[in-house]
Length: 258
Ligand SMILES: C[S@@+](CC[C@H](N)C(=O)[O-])C[C@H]1O[C@@H](n2cnc3c(N)ncnc32)[C@H](O)[C@@H]1O
Image (cartoon, rainbow, N blue to C red; front, side, top):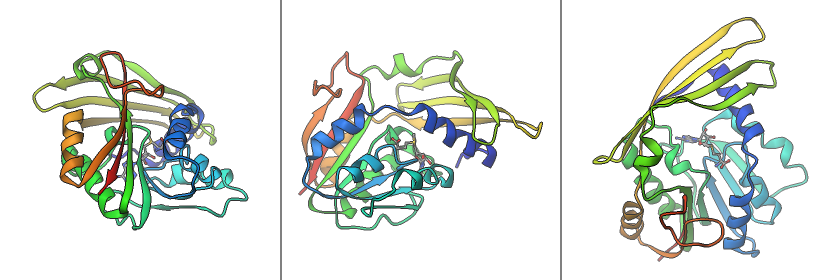
């Protein structure tokens, strides 16, 4: 399992909090699931960007994530809410609980799984575990960055600064992504994440992490869903309800467990 050093993990959680402020996906999710209160599980909930608005909309929500720094951000956003729960768990190896009406796999998590398991197997496992955690008639909701031409997205050796900034401890740094390649046959994306932190203590922390991921095609997602007993009810390529096409950049899928 690739995992960065703790000082870097804390810096990442602060950068994510500063940077990930989009709400389009959350508003869309809320409109798709409707106002009637439901029991919702969000796996890999991070700092609660999606989880907290779901609770504020009246749903009873549970979030799982294995990163304590990310989870520690949730508490201060939940004052007055008694319908939100979160705990530290590895979504690949730990139990998710059951009897949920909806399982949410959003915020690109299908393409951001950290585990030792073969990537494609881990992706399919998330769908299997969703089926087990849902009541009969329950919904799986998946939202991730998707293109019909992954080679254009991922075959790119150039350097891109993903985050640059200072965390709440005063540690300043950046995360660069480079050397990205895409293997069409195996749909494997390989890249390197480079972290460089200048800590307030004077220490400089550098870490390179080799990242290997599997880009799940729509056909694969469809076949995993149908083999697990899900029927797709809605599918979109963007938050304006357009179908997945050459010009859209997401796969948003709502499927029901039968
Ligand atoms: C990009 S963040 C998304 C957070 C949230 N879903 C959102 O959209 O804001 C991805 C999260 O996945 C979590 N994560 C990655 N692999 C995990 C695993 N195996 N078990 C639990 N959490 C995991 C990370 O800790 C991180 O908080």
